[in-house]
Structures are given as structure tokens and as C-alpha cells.
Image 1 (cartoon, rainbow, N blue to C red):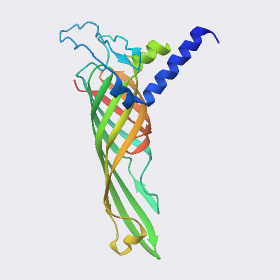
Image 2 (image 1 turned 180 degrees about the vertical axis):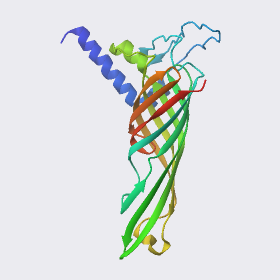
Image 3 (image 1 turned 90 degrees about the vertical axis):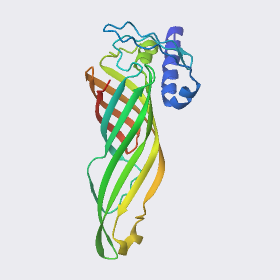
Image 4 (image 1 turned 30 degrees about the vertical axis):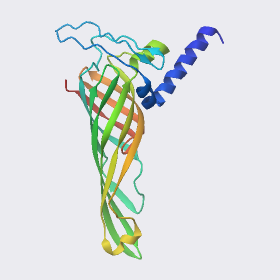
Length: 235
């Protein structure tokens, strides 16, 4: 293998490693971005920082996530995790909403909240019964937008005006509330429970317009293993 190809492969592997360990990178990285000018024709955004030894690339005035920008996301999930499986289950897809505030052109943070309702039908000692689960989730997300970094160090031909490749860490709480038949409560655990939840997802966003996009995320989210939905710019 030639030396240039070896160096390129090492850089690619390092970026993938960095995305997987985003929280550690965030704690150890020193990032700084200049503020965007408020005139009608802003110049390039100068971004001088460091990410695990990588010099962050400069992004232009059309970058979709300048410092101070706000995006809202609404999505649903499939492949639900941490929910019981018994009897016959019927449910609508979960609903999740999130807000994202850009701390600088690469890092963003914001809250999320969601709801999932499930109905169960089963039998216990020959008696049919039904129960309902209402699940609420809430917490915060930390997102790293990696498209420009992938373009610079992996020679990825990605149009930053059309695509956003990112990773997201979520931390929050899950609160489950049951409405079941008290006479047969021993058949399942119908107690109200609240517990912490951590997740990590890698996602891609496609901009149909500069202020509207569709997205998909893969990994462990607040509800499931696959999220998909829409995103729109607020400011």
C-alpha cells in the first residue's frame, strides 16, 4: 500500500472513531467560532479550532448551522426498545419532538420530548384482560455536524447545502404509566416506573430547501433503533 493511501485510510478511521466517541471529544476539544455578521451579504465564517488533532475546516456563509441558529425536528421511530412484549399489542408510532441550538457551526444542543401509547390484550388464568401503557420521554441532545470534516479529511464529495451527516448523543428520562386490570395485576408488572435513558445515533439530513429537510437516524434513540422525520429552520 502506498504512503498517501495509508495516511488517507488512517484519517478516515480516526474520524469514524471520533464520531463514535463524541462525548469524550466534546469534553477534550477546544472549539471557537467567530460570530456571523448580521448584514445582508455575510462573508465566510472563520472557524479556527481543533477536533482530536484535526484542524476544523472553514465554512461559508451558506452553512446551514451557523452559531445561534435554531432548528426544530419532529420524528417517529421503529424497532422500539425497552418496552414489554406480551399478548397482542397495538399502537401508533411514537412521536418525538426536539429543538437544536447551534453553539457554533459544528456543535448543537437542545431538549427533546416524546410520547408513545401502547394497548395490550392478553389472558391470565383463563380470563381475558386489556391494559394500556403511556410512555413519556424527555431530555437533552448533543449533536456534532460532521459533513465539512468528512469532505476535508475523507475527500467525500458531499454537497453541504444538500446533506448533513451528524451524530447525536441523548440523555434523559423515561416515565411509563400503566392502566391495567387490578384483579390480575400479578400477570405483568403494571407499576408506574421512571428511569434514565442514554442513546447514541448517527444520522443524515437531506435539505429539500435551505429551511426544510428530511432526516433519518440509526442507533439507540429515546424510543427505537431507527428514527425518521422532518426538520425545519426557525432562525
